Each structure stands twice: as C-alpha cells, then as structure tokens.
Amino acid sequence: MPVSWLVLLLIGLSVIGYILGRQRALASAGGDSRALHSLPNFYGMNVAMSALVPAAAILGVWLLAQPSLINTTVSGSIPASAITEGSSLDLVMSDVKRVAEGLDFAVSSGAMSAADARTLDAGQTDVRATLADIGVALGSDVRPEVLQAAQDYRAMASTGTMAMTIVVLLAALVGFAISYSKTNLHYRARNVVERGVLALLIGAASLAILTTVGIVFSMLFETVNFFGLHDWKDFFFGTVWAPNFRGDSELAILPLLWGTLYISVVALLVAVPIGLFAAIYLSEYASKGVRGFAKPLLEILAGIPTIVYGLFALVTFGPFLLSMFGEGGTFGVNWMTDARSVATAGIVMGIMLIPFVSSLSDDIINAVPQAMRDGSYGLGATKSETIRQVVLPAALPGIVGAILLAASRAIGETMIVVLGAGAIARLAVNPLEALTTITTRIVSQLTGDGDFASPETLVAFALGLTLFVLTLGLNVLALYIVRKYREQYE
Image (cartoon, rainbow, N blue to C red):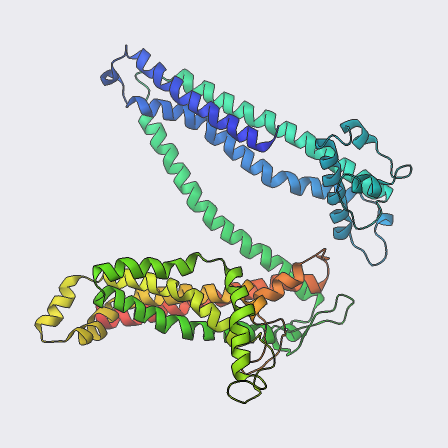
C-alpha cells in the first residue's frame, strides 16, 4: 500500500474514532452531557488521538529507518569484484538504486510484470536497452551483480513496506479499540487528552532540537573523516581552492570564506540603511494610506524566488555595471571584465534583503510604547530627536535581530551568487571582480555521483560546519550588543 493511502486511512480511522467515541460517551450518560466527566468532544478526541498518534509515530520512524537498513544490507552483499577500478561502493549503490527505480517504473507502467522483474537475467537480457525502451535512461550497461543487488533492493523494500503497513494498521486498531472500550461517563477523557497534547508539544519541541543536534553531529562526523584524509592546515590556512577528483587537491577555505563575507557585507551595506530608513519612515512619518500601500509593496520583494533575483543580476544588473565600469564603458575605465562580480551579486542580494530588514524593524519600532514618545515630546524634543534618542535605542535589540536575520540569509544564499558572482575562488579585493562563496562550493562538490570516501566530496561537510560556526558567532555577537545596549537604556 502506498504511504499516501496509508496516511489517508489513518486519518479516516481517527475521524471515525472521534465520531464513535463521542457517541459512546453520550450514550453512556443517557444523552445528558452534564453527567459526563468531560465534554463530549474530549471523548472523541481521545479515541482519535489513540488511533492516530502512535501509528503515525511508528510510520515516521519506519520511513526514516527502512531506507538506511536496506541500503546497509544490500551494500554489504555486493561482492568486492563488482567494484571496478576508479569506482567505489557508493557509486555502485547509486547504480543499484537507479536500476531498482527503473524496474519499479517498468512494473508500474505495465511494460514488465513483477515476476519478470524478479527473474530478469543480465546475462541473457540487455537490461539497459530494455529499460531505455520505456524511457528509463541508464549511464552504463547493467552488470549481473548490480542487477541482483537491485532485485534484492526491490524485494526488501516491498517486504518492508508490507510489514510497515501491517504494523501501523495494527497499532491504529489497537489504540482505537483500547480507548473506545474505556469510554464511559466516568472516564477522565479531558485529562488524558490534555496530557496527550502536552506530550505532542514536548515532542515537537524536542524534535526541533534533536534535528538541529543531528544535523550538527552528521556534519561533525563527516568533517572528522575529511580531516583524516586531508591536512587541516591546508584547509584552514591555505590560499588556493582547486579540487581535483583525481587526487592532489588543494582545498583551502580562505578564498571561499573571503568571498562569502565580502558579498554578504556588500549586501548588508545596501539592505540595512535602505531597510532601516524605510522602516523609520513607515512607522513614524507615513500616513495610514501611504503605509497601507507601501509596506505590502516592500514585502512583495521577499516573495520573489531567489532564482529570479539571480537572473536579474546575470541578465540586467551585471551588464549594466559592465557598461559603466568595463572597457569602453561610461566612465572610460577598465575595472570590470565580466558581468559577474562581487558588486553584482552583493547589490542584488541587498535588494532582496531589504524587506527582511524593513518589515521586522517596522514591527519593532511600532512596538515601542507611545508613552516614551510622549515623554520625549513633553521635554521639548523634536520628532527627529525623539526617533534618534528614544525610539531607536528602545528598539535596538529587535533591529539587531533583523540585521542578524538578514546577515544569516546573505551568508546562506546560493542562487544569486552562482549567477551573479561567478565561481572563481580567490582572494580578490576589487568588488568588480568575480568571486565565489562557501554555499556554491558545497553544491558543486555534492553535485553528481560523488564518492563519499574522497576528500573532494567530504570537504562539503567541513564547509557546512564552518557556515554553522560562522552563524553561531553572529548570534553570540548580536547577543553581546543587545545586552550592552539594554544595560545602557533600561
């Protein structure tokens, strides 16, 4: 049974449980809800939650664990002879999964029966040509070992899905039956439901924390593997980024870190003044009509996909800068040789970040109590003096948070940098030259069938961990600034 149908079945069972649980509670009280310990809805919710929550938890854990277990089992059964020179187990497993997906598609489209897919023989059939006839393209011929592993993969996945369906439905039915049997006028359904909701809230909060911890540890373990294959001194103190999957790579982070910080600073130099001034105008000077028109118009910028900004940088803004600062340009200088540059990506990224700064800063400034403004006016201060000396200091923690959000957004941006700044890793100072960032290199190193045992691929995790530490440092710096100014003004 497909997972989507299983989820719909669980939802349907919980709805039925809600209706039947509510009816049973009312029937036990002779139709008088006043005789019940809890409101009738609590009895229905108790049965619905008992049927849905444990089954959904089992389903989620199963879906997370099954692919890893199947991958480990199948990869362990692949003979060493199947791994040719220049290949690796990860690459072979990529071929296995593609063949398995191709067989699944062939069976689902009716081009091949399930029995034919199980008994297909690579020695007698050109599997690549057979799958190509139904629109499944493979990069190379399918060897017998790969086909056998793909068939094992499909069999385990099918068995696992069937077992998952049975276990999940049994859990739902058992939960339904137990909670329904307990439903009567004396049952404390409200207490049970409230404890269940509290457990769900705690679980949601824990899941967010554990996800963050899991991401950090996954990057940390792979980073440790990377430094076991590559010299850490070259990574942190080298000045050349030149990955070479044939070996002898120079994987220094300094050129990437420089490009990331350089482009982010340019973006913030554009976004912070414009966004902050726009927020001050909208909150302190603009009429209700102007504010009602201008603020939504500014926030539209936040909804534009970053790929659109990247295309704008590549097609429009980059050539515009080149026409001004390039050879034969408006200013008669030759400072720019390509439309891709730090300025191109940084300025366009700054335009994208304006609504992040303006909208949050506007909300924070509006949250400053009017009594503070009135007190300043009562002491004879002008409007501009009140804004500078009262409103902005009071709103400073929120403004710092808005700037931090914009900085984190700038550091993590990819598409604008790819299209607007180029892909050259170097330590250049001229803002009209092309550079690249950490995020673009992470994408580049993980694109395609990478060998996760090579430093050229594992370096992506070291770069990701560096980004995490960099963002954490920004948070610590912002916290220090906020505390310092709070001590001064409170």
